[in-house]
Image (cartoon, rainbow, N blue to C red; front, side, top):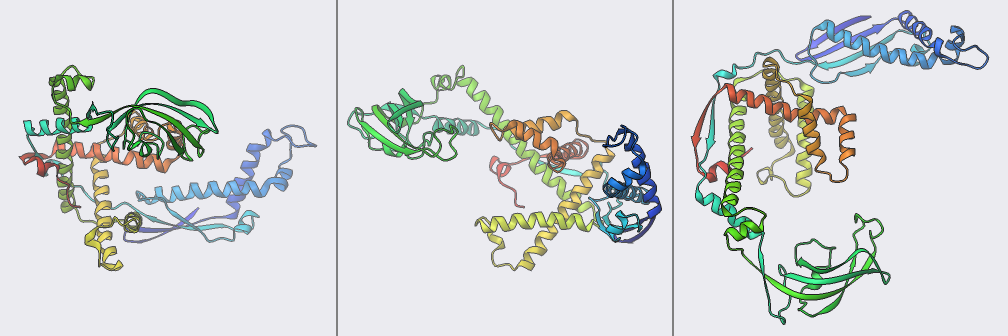
Amino acid sequence: MDCVETAEGLSRVYKVSVTAADLQQRLDQRIEEIRPQMNLKGFRPGKVPASHVRKMFGKSIMGEVVEAMVQETSQKAIADADVRPAGQPEMHMESDMEAVMDGKADLSYHMHLDVMPDFEPVDVATLKITRPVADIGDAEIDERIAQIAESNPQFTKRAKTAKARKDDAVVMDFLGKLDGEPFDGGAAEGHTLVLGSNSFIPGFEDQLIGAKAGDTLEVNVTFPEGYQAENLAGKPAVFEVTVHEVRAPKTAEINDEFAKGLGLEGLDQLKQLVTEQIEKDFSGASRDKAKRNLLDKLDEAHDFELPPKMVDAEFEQIWQQLQAEMDAGRGDPEDKGKSDDELKDEYRKIAERRVRLGLVLAEIGRKAEIVIDQQEVQQAIIKEARNFPGQEREVVEFFQKNENAMAQLRAPIYEDKVVDHILETAKVTDKKVSTEKLLAESED
């Protein structure tokens, strides 16, 4: 193998060539490896002559040899250059590949590769980080419990002549039919349905608005095309409904009985659970803002050349997301009126910051010997799978078979571990702030 390297900044071009004689030698070796396993008509098992194998399968075997040689020589070129690749190399064949496959020409190609910059990350022990924190007062606990009460209303029986309104609860019997025949799972007695909860088939609840206790009515609906019961999907149905009661919602009185209605021992336990949840929310908000302060400090402390292709890839991802947001009418109001060139300049700077911080965090993690164990990866896969009920197995298999998806899953886990390491090592000062300021969204 001959290799010539040219460099410009962090970009490298390696021109590699392998002689036709070397390829032929590899072809002969490969034929000898597979001959003992070959079983062709007219020959005893394992006794097929090499010349016949070359005549029958030489071109396809040479294809395997060339692919293996490109993989082997490209890796050797990178290893000999003693560089760390910043992404996958781009391969460009220069040879007439038909002639190479026929053994009549050398294999020549060049590969473009960005390499990692050589820099020394800041000593994280010298970083001074501010972490905002807030005290949990009775007001926050009472407000959170009030929100729970509002989302778990109690109901009181209305007069028999009262017509059902949105947010009322209707106690009813119903019997569903397809083409005049009852179907499995389409009947219930004494069922309570909150109108407006969207817990029934689309259109069902709307037709109960205005119904009174004692009313009997027909509700006509069409099951959605993607309905979970395939025998009902997309089909029209008629429900015979008898209304027994109409109940009006009222905000629950916050006491032991209310807490017991939520499955708890009493109000004290509810307050304890709410306090723990608020502590978790506050802790998460404090960490997020400390992380932002940390990233700002890291960005200020480092200035080095960035791999061009990494920046380009990050920018393209950001730009595509921006275009999708703008097309959906969710663009940043501050971006309105700006030209594409202005926007691209701003968002390229964001891409450069992300790449720089990613490289810095990766180098800090490498020096601190931070690794992700298999259990952490499995927990992340399970968490992701739970977002797709009924398809958990497919999600797990997708990650197991897709290296890029697995890398995207591992990246935030690794970043969080590095950030935690820095926050444990740096000089972190807690600063008391109001609840509103702690929970306020940070501006990007």
